[in-house]
Image (cartoon, rainbow over all chains, first blue to last red; front, side, top):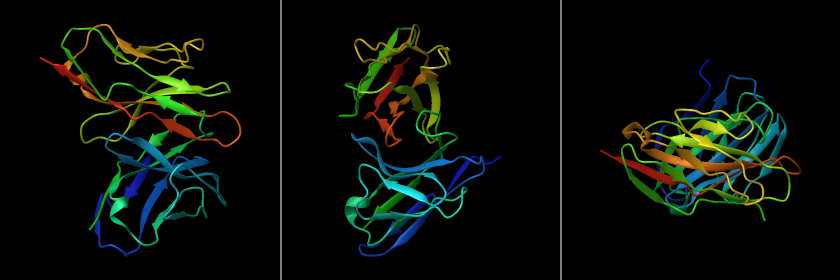
Length: 113
Length: 110
């Protein structure tokens, strides 16, 4: 039981490049979400999903896309990377939603130059 | 507005001293409240949640709906408690989201 797995752990992008951050969970959780962690700002919700085929925007969705074709996977796409997207990204899942315990991935440290 | 406020960015205490990390929330519904901890180079993990009303690693937190607070307390801090602590609110109606505070870094000094 691996829990929540994020890849890659580190990534450097050039401005304008696109990439996908992968997130997979093996706990059959319905709810998954993406956050960015910035100094002094805590964790801010980017996008979330309450089940396969259903996604919604969080607090800071601009510049990011998500899809949820399976229960297990919830990839985050950066369409055209900008230096402002330099951050640590965390994926999380929970069994029954935001009133349940969230399990986090180990994070992806992204630098956009 | 839905908000979680952690007023202290950094809290330094000596080993053996009591610790209180403050958390206040704003939410019109009935909240689910959590404390998550991030030790150095580790992923965020649940420390405790208000509904379980248990003590984890000596930490406790009581939900005070009148003061809209969920402060985290420990009577005697240990060096291994040094970490980043996040208070989080889980919404229970409408759009289901976790709302995190900005975090408090706890440093326990020898």
